[in-house]
Amino acid sequence: MAMFRWLYLVLAINIRAGVHIAVTSRFPHQNHVVV
Image (cartoon, rainbow, N blue to C red):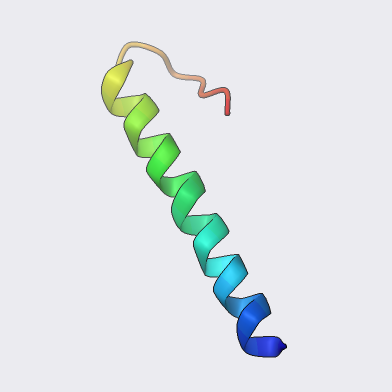
């Protein structure tokens, strides 16, 4: 159970980081990022 929770946490962080990188690279002129 603990391993599943850790895996879910890592997956959620990776998804947020990936979305943030994609949005910032696509719109470099905007300072704020709305997810």
